[in-house]
Length: 375
Image (cartoon, rainbow, N blue to C red):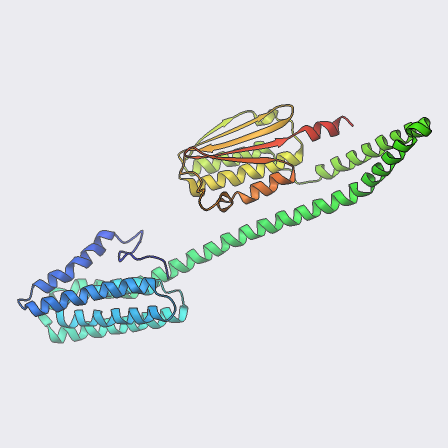
């Protein structure tokens, strides 16, 4: 069951004020009688009911069925002796939150049966009081029938949506892992042999520098030629990757933030960036992940994205004015693990600040790219 001790159901379509009235009404039914003993026992029954109701939400496995059974018994007592039938709605709400399908339908059927039988018996015991309440009793019976089914189906749908979301995240992780494995295999097949050759020829050239300078120069030329071939093959490998342009991702991010009613500000011209395709892919995926976290979890009203590039590195900063990241549970629990892993693949870094909203600064070095281009 849910870790929830409140007696008031959290529902988007049932006002909490109605439930408060249902909590107050039994005391009105009690004070109608002149018997102090009846009032005393009625108050005890109501307090016991809500105590058992609290235990129902705190219990697991078979104990919750025991507590809800006690609630049903108290429903019957309140109906027969005090003419108050509306506690049955609280019990119906709890039954709708039972996760076990078999347990739900058993308790659902028993509750409907006991509620209807006690109401019918109430008409024979105290006809006048029940006739005055007939419209409300009908509404209560309808609620007892419909409310558990509605809540049960809603919870089931929420669970399915959660499982679907987890499945999507797992699939995304598997796709990333598989892509890494493929890139690693391609890089090994493409560069492994040539890098080994470059290493061997470098050792040979070092030994020949003093003994045979001409042969050493020839080895160095072959090393240079091999390096150019390797660089060409790497560029062909990268060009075959699925490109995710940062400019296109910025458009999608803007649409997502506008749909979430979050003000969006972009600093920097993404069209003027001159970065490798692999770096652009990683930046695009990191931007998408960061903005998704802002929309889902931050509660922010403003989001600022800044993208800058110099000769040595490219920097992307994503800042919002939301509630920030929870340091106690660790930043990895805020969906940032994937960003770190992607950045580690290309020697990038991620810096996180809370002030009080979250500020992510992504830095990716470009020195290696410039060096490769000059070979």
